[in-house]
Length: 278
Image 1 (tube, rainbow, N blue to C red):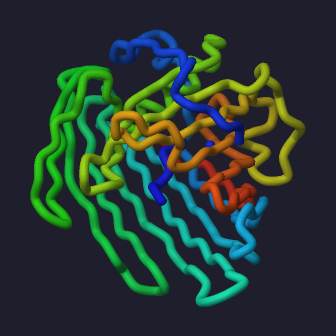
Image 2: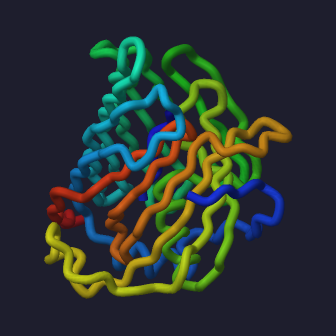
């Protein structure tokens, strides 16, 4: 399972997905999304939403997500643990820690990922990447698990820029977009094709029980995201996601669909993080 970008359960293939050129650095919509962003730390409980395989009998877990403004960029830390019960055989216990830094102009990125399975660390992936400009080509260099270099194709963007761009394009009521996102979460090329579809119009949800000081009165939009491998001809998503994303960057009410089973993430803690005095 790949780590999550921030900030998606409808079957959607590549055919018919709208394509748009990547935004120029700090264009009006992305700039407005950045200005409204509020650094925060959020915790979610994961529960089984549905199981399509009779082998999956239960699922639970936790996800914590921290998104900071560190003056020269955005710092993200994500911790995830999932436990899956099976009707036969040994259950699954897996997770990951994902740390990243991304320059505010979207052209530089560093990442460090630890993966765990059955209580043991199984893999570390680390490296850095740069783009000539947002949406243009660039290079990624992996330091772990082994040294390698990958060319990033034209159209590539990094995860935090992608999060801001989804907010901006949803507010512009662009219904469908396709992006190539590099997050480093696979040691082969770290690239994922992401289709994003806006579901319905903007709305202001009822005052939430958690994090009202950050969410009350904020408009939010529900998005569907499908994540694809970059192999030619691959038409089935690796996984799908629905998420309610607020205008200040906070996400709630996720559904992560991995095919055999789907998990729902419920926001249980939310706190604002201080903005730096840059």
